Length: 325
Ligand SMILES: NC(=O)c1ccc[n+]([C@@H]2O[C@H](COP(=O)([O-])OP(=O)(O)OC[C@H]3O[C@@H](n4cnc5c(N)ncnc54)[C@H](OP(=O)(O)O)[C@@H]3O)[C@@H](O)[C@H]2O)c1
Image (cartoon, rainbow, N blue to C red; front, side, top):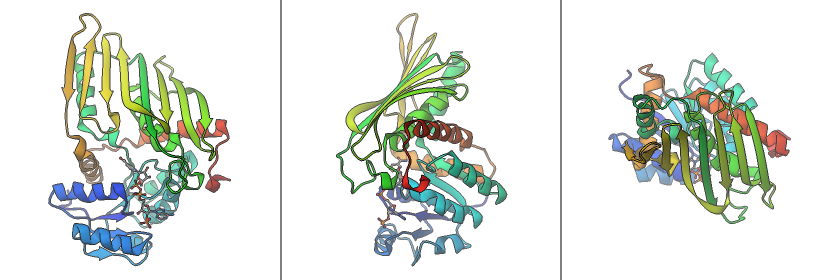
């Protein structure tokens, strides 16, 4: 394994700060910073003691010292950055949602393949140690395949066009912003991709999806319901029911705790692993393990399944972003 990979951040917003803090936990620093607004890039670099800030974003793709680019700009900007990064032979960890649709994802996956690099979504659920611990619990207790999943995710956002949440020009909407977590959770537990998907949607005044109800089923009759909302608060709660009992995970995008309640005696068992605040650190570690071929742990096939479902749904709703018109 190469001793230390050089990470560059493309974006210096809320989540990019978490990347800097994740590397700091390992006594490391981000190698370089690329950002649309140069001054904000400089401030970010000062905050974390990073020496290199590019004058323009494109310079990050040309820097031969950069091994991995972390992209944390709005969803609709990802594909153009991905094209450049992957063609330049950089490994890429890209924030959710990884692209706008399956077509873009397919293109980027192809570029990654041609350039022999690792390209994956920064989906916390796939990297929190809790989920591996739960998989072990499922195995140890011979729970088999899930029967039903019930998922909620809702936050209250104002109809404010200055941020991305309801803004069609910034690929806003419930599905790409929070639905991607619920679908990733469902995909993690379901033994295969759900091919049957029914939906209800209520659009926000801005034309993006504000409330979404989903009903999923795969060929093994595993079913899931998902309720998403962007203007109504709900707990981030996931329930996975098996014949022998049910699993409950609160705050599932970054959870470190779950419980399992057995059907026959009502006994409740706690399952715990990892720390919520280390979410980005786990992503960094898994990305580096995958690049160094120590272990393949980025779950790109789940990302593809989730993106296919989201793409199909938006097609059914007639919800297109300006880039897709
Ligand atoms: N995994 C998670 O837990 C998590 C949490 C939050 C967000 N996210 C995801 O991460 C991404 C960013 O979220 P955030 O909350 O960090 O956003 P944010 O704080 O608003 O930061 C956005 C960043 O993107 C840049 N940017 C905005 N529009 C751009 C454009 N048209 N071209 C190039 N750069 C542009 C901004 O640059 P300026 O400095 O020039 O404005 C800023 O650096 C989103 O995809 C979001 O879904 C993930």
